[in-house]
Image (tube, rainbow, N blue to C red):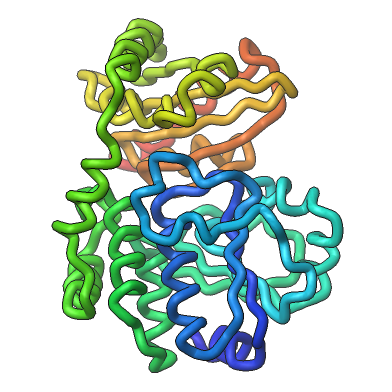
Amino acid sequence: MFETAKTLVDEAQHITVIQAENPDGDSLGTALALEEILSDLGKTVQLHCPVETPKYLRYINGWDRVTLEFDTKSDLYIIVDTTAEVLLSKTFEIPGARHAIDTRPVLVLDHHISDSTLTFDAHLVSETAVSTSEVLYHFATASSWPINAQAAENMLIAQMSDSRGLTTRSSTAESFFVAGKLTELGASNADIEERRREFMKKAPEILEYKGALIQRIEYFLDGALALVHIPFEDIQAYSDKYNPSVLVLDEMRLVEQVEVAIAVKTYPDGKLTGKLLTNAPVAATIAGFFGGGGHNYAAGFRIYETYDAAIKEIIDATDKALKEQSSEAL
């Protein structure tokens, strides 16, 4: 499975690792782990993301090495944690980036269940795994590449981030095995969590804002769908301090009768993004209606649509996905 991918890496000297425009703990941790592993192999590595690293991720050592710049002369591009081309559009807006991707080798490491929407040639390495970092661990060990302590920490951060501490349904015995191996290699989940908790302390105004968000939650489909709108004014006011959707989305999912929780952000250019957490395995299906993707229980999408029209479509898509899932369960 990894032979072609290893050959691509072996033959490259200058490598750019690309995160999509929605970086999270998995994409950042995996990118930083790749930087460690590839640097130990003697490669020159650039870490690229088309948006600034969110402040809630800056407890991860090395986040400041990620750059908005894009090296159009790299020998190999490695895309992590996405096969959705729409999430690479900001990178493709950089002069020369699309041409470089189209004309040079591309390797994609991902773990999402959604079908790829990439329109350029790429070698895809994807497994059903709890995180992209778990795929990277298998890739590195199959290739007999050394994993230093910092790379192990980065991979464990990524794994714990996407699995909420190995508590999601996508967490398997293999996930725990990999976590154990990363711990043996020098990662400490206790140290990571202590650093994360210290960094995630909230200012009093964030708690006040959380209360306002909770008051804003709407329920549809007899309570099966919980939805909250986060307008651009909120994004401007609070995103630097704390991701607004993270404040309430998981708690929305824990409300009685709720199967699907969605945070919808709207932007002045007409862009609308949706982040989903679900109790039923329908998140990727719902996101797929809008060209997005993700996991069974967590997914996202981005569209250009008026808010009112989008909400109607979201309600219809959720209703359809829940009915299909219910009939399959019978």
